[in-house]
Image (cartoon, rainbow, N blue to C red; front, top):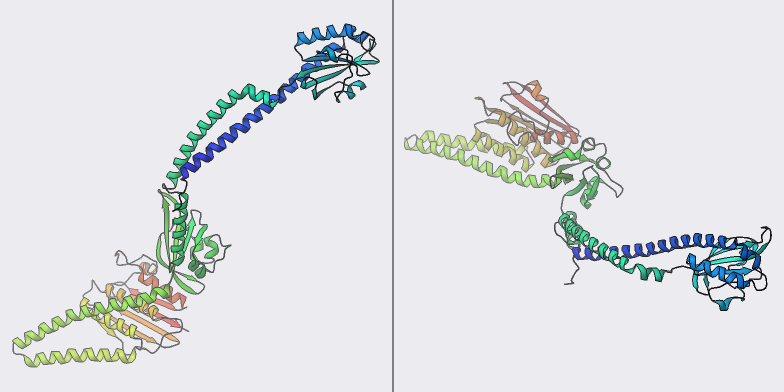
Length: 522
């Protein structure tokens, strides 16, 4: 496996390099700044000395005259030594030198190249390479005693320190600055690296990248839609299935845009915690769940899952079939054991005729009911559900009757078997529970349906509901039974009926019973 450099090592190396570069560049910049300051100060000093020299009467009266260097040279050298400048050169109007630190240059023509403007009565400072090296030179015109005619030029030069000289002079300070900055940078980089490692749960960047790819692949391959948001409701991730369910595009940024004109767009998702709440998207019902995401007790966003309810219903139909079959078998076993005990007792008492009569009666009743349901309810899942509920009713001591006018030839277009099972199963279960605390326990149902019409009603002799209770029965989580986990069935029924543009009517009177009716038409 390829060996990777650890994050802490990378941060230490990078920080050290940055600090070294910063200190070095700062040092060079500082040296340039010092050099510029020196040059400015040297120039002001040089031009002040040149002005003083140019005003001396001995120099003004002898420059340009034969033998003038004998007077000018001693004066210029005396001033040069007392002011600690590198050279003072007096020129006449023909650029002839009348003074110089090296006497061999006296009498020779000055050829610096930067002196021309000085012979036009201008004074200025120049930087140039002279006979003694790179220098800051001040040029000041020398006027006659009346101050009308220019008779010469006074040049004062001071050798300026170059970068190499300054580096040599300040190399010790620069070295200690570089060393101190490097130590500070290393300490800071070490703390920074530790903090970064702590924030990333001690994971290296390549490990984080691998985890990200793994989680992304898992999210994309799940059979449910996944949407992740930040703490302000802005979408940070959507898998392919969620994009397909919501018809979202790459430009979609918020939940309000995804769930436009839907109940979710009017609520703060960061305050929600829902499980399998039905929602209509583009004419298709989905089950929406919302889970808050916390990182170290801080709310950082929400996770939304979308599942196609038709797929859930397919699984539900299979589960319901198994559940109802188990319940029916258990109830039938319980009932048959009681019948067998009765038949066995009659036989022991010698009441053979009564025993035979009981056997014939039970067999006839069961065969009649099964025959009726088989002939009138064409959907086997629904007929199985009704038979299972009948067995459950016997176990609960509830009289459960199916109206003889019942039939189910076909299902309304768009209404699946799972939808019918949800409607019928939940309404019958509610009726059973309503009768739980009553002496007279009776539930009657009527089911009718074909390709264009579906009707189902169930009436119980239960405890009933007040008008106030009727106003809350379709709210998710509300239950007049006050049992944990209840208050979901009627909400699911209402969502299905609303989606199919049907009606559900519930009438009730306290302590008299309740009737629920569902009508769906094409």
